Image 1 (cartoon, rainbow, N blue to C red):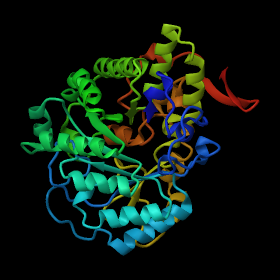
Image 2: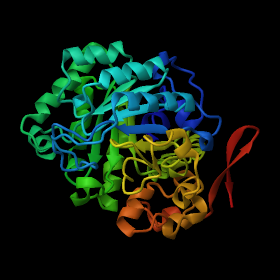
Image 3: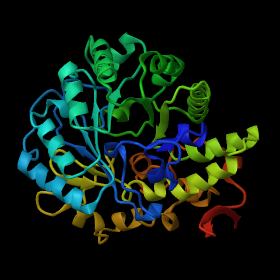
Length: 417
């Protein structure tokens, strides 16, 4: 994730220490929004994206799990899921994100959330929002969910409904947002960038402001599940979309609206922002470079700081890598699976820089991006270490002296090599 609000607009959030190794100085978040913070990004425990069920009440065109409104056999039982939560708590993961399918169709979702909170886990939920009524929104608050992420594909109802495969989905999703806002629950918008959705970004930001939404995550497309058939942005379209996100984020925060905006699954957004700030003569450009170097981009993401448990208990490097499994939590603890580097891919993910090929292997920003999303590279090229095809930086931008992080007097400094 690239936290645009933090890096470009100077906002500090509850996730800033986890993401950039910086202490919170301006805010004191409530306990349930705080995350375990590692001394170094390489030492992070993973945020666990957990697809609790494959069942979903919608049939979205970009669903990476290819879910439908039907029952799938062999999903984890309540007791099996609680045993996993015990392990995650003992392993001190910074957060567990309940996803699906649609996690709210699982009858024990609140029982599991309550158990997770009793184990002091930071709990997040990813949902399509259509099932959230007033009672459910109040339950989110009572159980201290740190954040509810609701997917929205367009500010235009017809376009959203087409993406979601159900007429009226937009209205039901917007009611879900409003119930969360009214209940005082931190809620965010989640959108996958495609050629269709990227044309609607200004309207999406207008909606965020109008509806009082706290947070928004803009996901770069990974061709997984039904998403393999969607049209990804070309480099020029990506740059245009990211420029809109950067500019609207800064504008909102400059005007005093405290909104967290993040881009997800393309770590070249960080170097792109740094270069933009350099061109603008931004006084915090050097600080931002330090922060994205500390973060490490993909280097400390999939297989290190991000993990996935699917509906059947299989463990993957991330939610887009379900084509490769490292073990199953029904047979072995997640913590044991995650620390086992006998699989060469898991070992490579934990030390990927020497393995990167092509543009990613020679890029001067590889300590800040580290080849971005390996699942996308492998899905498109067949090679997990090839260049990420979604990189939109030019050859001129990635060439030149390599920027590597070092620690001098406990601070990062830029050292050309």
